Image 1: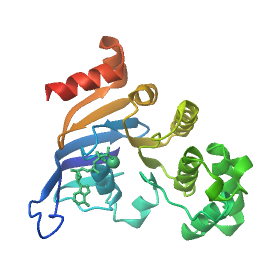
Image 2: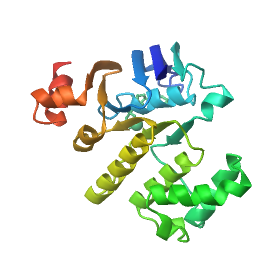
Image 3: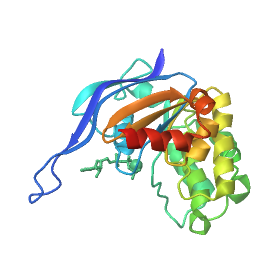
Amino acid sequence: MNAIEAKGVTKIYKPLDFWKKEPILAIQDINLEIKKGEVFGLLGLNGAGKTTLMKIFLGLLKPTKGYVKIFDGKIEERNIRQKIGYLSELPYFPKYLKAYEILDYFADLFHLDPKKKKEKINEVLDVVRLSDKQNLKVKAFSKGMQGRLGLAQALLNEPELLFLDEPMSGLDPLGYKETRDIILELNKKGKTIFFNSHILSEVEKICDRIGILHKTKIIDIQPVNRILKNYKNLEGYFIKKITEN
Ligand SMILES: Nc1ncnc2c1ncn2[C@@H]1O[C@H](COP(=O)(O)OP(=O)(O)OP(=O)(O)O)[C@@H](O)[C@H]1O
Ligand SMILES: [Mg+2]
C-alpha cells in the first residue's frame, strides 16, 4: 500500500478578482506514488505549485480534476486524517502563550487522552529539542524555534505521514542540521515524510527520492542516490532539468 497516490491531479484557481478574469492553472496532471516509509522531497521554483499540491493532499483544497488516495483511503475520512501531521509554510502561534501551553491547547483539540497528554507533550518537545524552552513565551522565540514548535504540534497525534511545507526556510545552518536530524529520526521511527523545499544541499542529505515540479507539471522523479552517482550535487541536476524544460 502506498502512503500517497495521486492520479491526474489538476488545480485551476478561480480568477482573483473581477478585473483579472483569467483562471490560474497552478498544477496539471500530477501523477505520484509515495511509498510508506519514504522521505520524499518536492522541489520547484517559487510559484511552481508545491504548496497547492500539498494542500490538495491534505484535503485543504479540492482538485479541479484527478484524485488522491492517502493510505488507500480518502483524506476526507476521519481515520485517514488522524494519521496525518502538517507543518504549514507559515505556522502562527499566539505570542503571549508559552510553548507548553500551546501544545497543551492543541493536545486538547486533538482529543489526546488527558492521562497521557503530559507525557506526549514532553515527548514531542524532546523530539524537536525544545524541552528547555517549554516555559518561554512564543514572543521570545526565534524563527527557527517557532518552526520547531510547529513541528512539535504536527507530531502530537502520532502521525504516520508528515507533510512539511518548507521546514527549513529561514533557518541558519545549525537550524538546517537540527531539522535534518529530526526528520531522519522520525523517518527511522517509520514515519513517511513528504516535504517541499528549496534548500537542495539539505534535500540531498535527507530524501530517498525527489520530484521536480516545474511550470505546473512534474517533470522528473528520481532516487537521490541515482542523481548523485552522475552529478556532483543535487543543485547541478536541478538547474539542468529546470533549464531544459
Ligand atoms: N488562492 C489562490 N488563488 C489564486 N492563485 C493562487 C492561489 N494560491 C496560489 N496561487 C497561484 O498558484 C501558483 C502556485 O502557487 P503555490 O503557492 O502552490 O507555489 P509554491 O511552489 O508553493 O511557491 P513558493 O515556493 O513560493 O512557496 C502560483 O502562480 C500562485 O500565484
Ligand atoms: Mg509554497
